[in-house]
Length: 229
Image 1 (cartoon, rainbow, N blue to C red):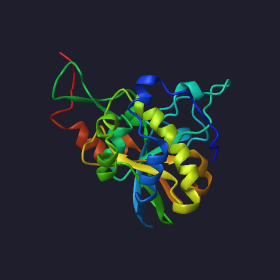
Image 2 (tube, rainbow, N blue to C red; image 1 turned 120 degrees about the vertical axis):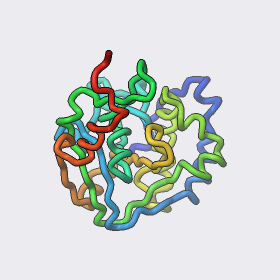
Image 3 (cartoon, one colour; image 1 turned 45 degrees about the vertical axis):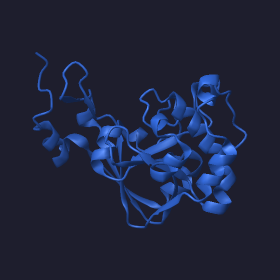
Image 4 (cartoon, one colour; image 1 turned 135 degrees about the vertical axis):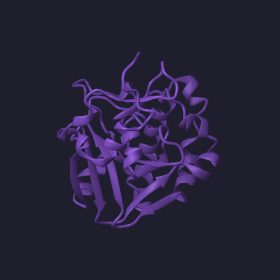
């Protein structure tokens, strides 16, 4: 893992960031394990993005844009997966609330042809748990829920360094965190430096979202906006 990666943290982000040494101490005792046989899900907009080789845009956990290489790629990235299909759908933004019409959601353009990727673990998966008591102890719950994601992108960079330092001790290759789009559910981010190994330890199946029963359920949901008046 490329632990030497750095990016200057803006002052208003740094003042809300726990010291890295403290985060390391907390994470060393905040490891959770998903057992072999666990089924995870991921929403992908194309076959190429099911488990991408690289990314040119980052999301919640970054890294921040300032760490982008000259060719447009990032030095590392996070692969986002979920512990259930509904969290994958909302976190992957196949569905999204309609700002102008309270109470309604919509399918985003192209969602019907998107893929739901099922990943069954063939080996135990160790993760750093950053929700629950971990977030409470570190005082970062509000930042974790901020839709702006600016703080989270720098915390993701901090976790890159923490994960590198603690890997030999913990074996953790990602983070488990509270979903912002489906509360009381968890989402997972796997560090890209471990994807080559991880892909060999999962069984992968894909299906077109529009062909699945869950799509039909959401299509017929009374909260789905049929047509804007």
